[in-house]
Length: 119
Length: 421
Image: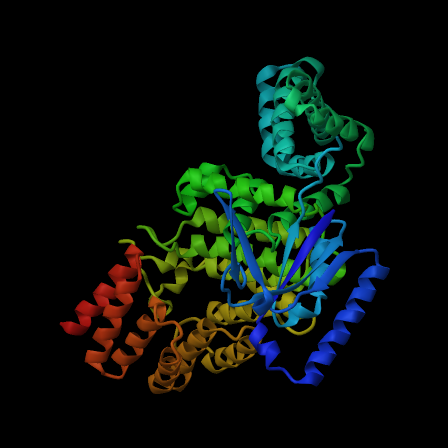
């Protein structure tokens, strides 16, 4: 069963972090991604550029509106994601707990909807 | 010897079996059918079938196996019929066939297997991915067999709200795929904490009801103790044993906590001859058991403190220095303001009201427990003992404004009257 793991963390504290700290974090992510590829959990994933680079698109009454920034201001910001294949929620939780961002931020684990039936 | 087909006798047998076995049968049906609602329906169908068949066929030699087998069969049958009569439910036919093919009778239903099923049920109902109040409601409903109305009454919540809470929990279990499993060894300690927390919350709700006219709703406390016993029977881990001890020791004081008028009596005012000595003995024995293996946990320490109170013939003879030392350890395991408060009260008994008051003032100055009536009530008591009348009155009034519980309010009002008068 597929779960999306959304990685939320405080961007500002990472923006202020030293190069060493950031490099260490990157190393942890590479190691983790490697691990879950080997264990067969990895389906997809990526880090995201900061919310300053975000654009929010809405279409209302046929009109496209584009605004600068994330959809809402939040205390923790979405910084990356993993799409994983897990046996059940316990398995997914075990994987999510090992995501490096879990130590400082929050990982939201959401089951995906089943794919629509074949035509 | 009653005839095997004597309907009245059979009915009595079925009632007895329902009381003794229905929870076990449910736990196994949930495992076999993979769904709470299907299992509940199956349980109901199985007992209905028993009422119909046993007077004719006689009571089976293994009633539990008969009920499980019948329940499962009826469930598969139901799913097939639903699939046939409603196009939108056609997928149920697949569910039915999968169920029919994966498990075949005779079922391995020895005692160990059934205990595993009960553990699976407890751990699933107390899964941390479920909302806290949903864990409590689901556990009372599925493990204890309380009706939605009984649970709603116990927690002073409207029944539809509680019913919705249970529905949402079951939906979460299904949609997020929370597995029906006993946690692996590596996760067991954490998951056990969840279960113990739920049981303790239920006990506390019964021990000192958070609002309403009666101080204790002892049905809930009894249910919690029953749950605690079940857990210890299935999984004699030391913190489970400790929690049972703690609940028994608290509950032993139940009749002495409340006066004939329904008023609250504090530890130093209680008639200790009214304490349930048998329960205390059992509690103390369990505390020894819990503390004998390795470093004590949160419940172990709290149970040890309760045991010291239980052994003391009166409040003055209590080994307060030992209690303070135990709170020191508890504070390391559970560094919360409430534990700090309880420690402060013990320090006041050991070292004098001044020492305790300084600690409570420090907690409140930090901004912690400012809306917790017990903090102000404890503070008021210490001020009173120090002869600081005005401060005591102000603190009692603050405490009064923060509690909705009738006996507590009457207690605080009485204190106010006596200190003013």
